[in-house]
Amino acid sequence: MFYLVIDILGTIAFAISGVLVAMEKKLDLFGVLIIAFVTAIGGGTLRDFLIGNTPVGWMTTPVYLITITATVIATILFVKQLRYFRKSLFLFDTIGIGLYTMVGVEKGLIAGLSPVMCIILGTITASFGGVIRDILCNEIPVLFRREVYATICILGGVIYFVLIQFPLDPTYAYVTAIVSIILMRLLAVRFKISLPNIYRD
Image (cartoon, rainbow, N blue to C red; front, side, top):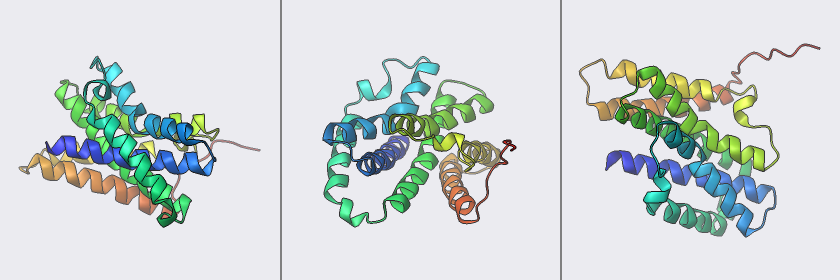
C-alpha cells in the first residue's frame, strides 16, 4: 500500500508538470490531457516493457487514468493559484523525479535485478516521461541540458542501497532517498551546479 501511494503521488506530480508545460504552449484541452498523460506514465511504461511487465501498469490498474484525468481537471481549475508557471513546473517536476526514481528502484527489486540495474530502472522511470513531454512540446529535454537531472536520480538510488545495508526499516531508507533526490535538485538549481559542457567554440 505504501508503494502504491508513492506511485500515485508521483503520477500526480508529473501530471501537473505536464499540464503546466502544455498550457504554457497554449495547447487545447485534448493536447493538455495527452501531455499530462505521457509525462505521468511515459517512464513507467518504458520501465515495464524493459522488465517484461506487460500489460503495463496503467493498463491493468484504472486508478492511474482516473488520477491523471482528475489531476488535469484540478490543475486547470486552480492554475491561477499556480501563478509562477516556471517555479511551479520546476517544483512538481522535482517532486516527481524523487518519487518515481524510487518507484522504479522498487520495481527492479521485485523483478530480482541487481542494484545497478535497479538504479537504471529508477532513472528511466523518473526521466523519460519528461523527455517525451519536452519533445512533444518542441523543447530540448531537461535530461540533455547542463542542469543535473539523471545524475541526481542515480545518486538517490545509491543512497537507498547504502542505507539498506544498515539495520534500518527499509521504509525509512526509501523515504530518505526520495527526500535526498528532491533536496539535491533544489540545491543544484539554487547554486547553479551543473555538469560540464563539452561544447567548444
